Structure formats: structure tokens, C-alpha cells
Length: 284
Image (cartoon, rainbow, N blue to C red; front, side, top):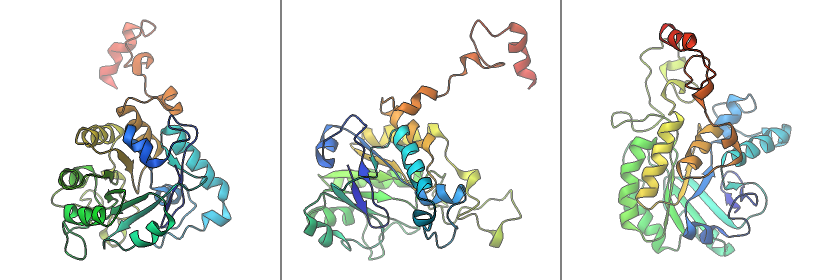
């Protein structure tokens, strides 16, 4: 599927199990995974400058863009480049700002809102009321993306799922946000005194990064409450997407190299690991 976003174009992979099917048909059959976070990952790799995050990389290093898309595809993403059979409007703080234009194309729409520190849109709507308004206006998929990590997004998603009948999207950032610090913009690292301006966003969020198992748990919880459009936003790496896919019972190509500790030199339980080495594991 190829939803075109307001900031990036993308499409649904013909290499995955739903090849040839449109977005809504695919969602009706089960969860769809959408890899996000390209700008953060390209900044990590030295192709984008943090701050304005202007993606000159598209013109200067197109091969880097293609390579990263292929990594996410290999890890289990269903939404990447090539063709357009749906349009994504994401990271909005006001409702309906793009829906009218999308509907004019006749293509399926995915509208995801960004909820900042205050638990409402900039126009004062709760996430569930905003998504219900979008559904009533004709959106095919509604939900949330960015800003909030799994722990502070999931409670909002539960309310949205109860408020609407259409498909719901859930794409948190992979950071450990909390009730005290609900978005990744204001996470504080008390263990580091060398941060520019004292802030961790956007270049020092590393200590708060969710591990793959936390992302897998989020995916399972989201599916349990009836959410089928899943992904990870700014900060996502391919191993997050692979873990999400595996949590849904899938085996993307990258799963060939998923962790297998059985033959680890010290922690393995295989017969090829000597008892001497196993005993050393307690002294590492």
C-alpha cells in the first residue's frame, strides 16, 4: 500500500503477504505495520541535520533513502515506497486540516493526530472526540502518532477505539515517556550534565529508548483492543519493527537473524557450550 504522507510518500509492499490488496482490504484482514521515523534514523546515520530536519538527503543521497526503506521492509513494514493507493496525513494538532483535500483524490485516508503535553488537540478536543469528528467527516483510519511513547499513548488509544467504528492507527515514538513527562520533547536526563541547553530532545534521547520487547508488548496490547494500523514513529529502528512484526506472529526476512542465545559462549544452553564457560558467566 502506498499512503502518501504530508511529509513523506510511501507505499504498501508487494513483497509482503498482502500483495495486491488495498489498505482497507488489508486492514479488514488483520494488522498492518507502518515503519516511520526516517528523519531521526537518517540523522543518526549522518544524512540529516537535527533541528529543522530538512531532508536534503532525498536529493543528495537517494541511495541512503532507498536502503533504509528496504531495511524497514525487510524487518516487517508493510508501508514503504512505490505507487500510491492511500494518503497519510500525520502529526497534526488541529483536526480536519487535510481531510477535505485527501477525499478529493478518492483514495483511502489515514489521519493521525499528535497530542502534546496537554491531553487534547490545539483546538481543545480530546483525542477521542477529535477522532470521532474525523470519522464523521469521512476519514477511513484515525488515530495518533508521534510525541508520546507507548505508556502515555496507549490510554488515549483505548478511549479512541471505544469512540469510533473505523480503523484506528497507533504509532508512538519508541521512548519511555511517563505521566510526569508525557512527550519526548521534555524528557530529563539527571545523569548527564553535558547536554546543550540541558535538554535531551532531539539528540540525546538514547537513555530513554524503548527496547524491542517493550515495543512488542505495545503491539500486542494495541491489537488486543482492536487496533490494526500499527507502527513506530520518530526514533524507530528496524529492530523495533521486526519485534512488532514478530509480536503479531509474523516472520519477516530479518527474523532469520532474530536473537538466539542458545550458543552464546557464556549464556548458552547448547551442548556445545562447556560447563567451564557456563560457570564463568557469573563472573562477567
